[in-house]
Image 1 (cartoon, rainbow, N blue to C red):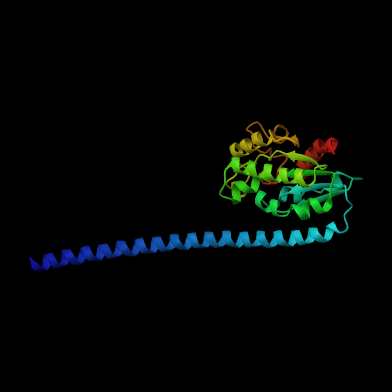
Image 2 (image 1 turned 90 degrees about the vertical axis):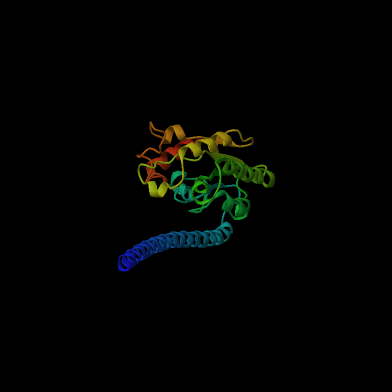
Length: 242
């Protein structure tokens, strides 16, 4: 009886120990996975911050050569990749887009991106990265865009502001690139931006979206960024407003 009881207890201990070991290993692996994921996010943020600072420094130097009274295209990577000189020949156009930028970043660099240029017109597109990189709401994104517009109107009251609606996304093309961005949130932002006073608001959603309301594949690279067919559409819509 004693030995039977002993072996039963020993077996129970072994089973419990084994379960504890596998639970520990699973937890450790999950912890490593979380650590690697957080590390990747931190590394990406470091790259974005470094690139942001370098671009701002570049803008400062370029602004020394720029002619006042031109047209400033301001925004994130969608603006950065917009070859405005080719699409608007004969005009003094300046690209002040920074990949990965948000409303928070743009608010900090309005001096280098807008005021130093003393432009007659600002073409503004910002907000999509807020949904992917910041803990925020569509309403808060719209509020920050409104604050940016307000700052420009206050410090450069003669400057015309062309405010673009945030473009739709297409998660079916590349969900990893689209990330946490949702067209529902984007529509909320745009509905609020449409009410802003003192701007020329241009909403190209109906032109750029497919029947589902997604960024049309013929205009996008991977569901977020725009290809040259898309830029041609945007340029044709903006040109009469300049």
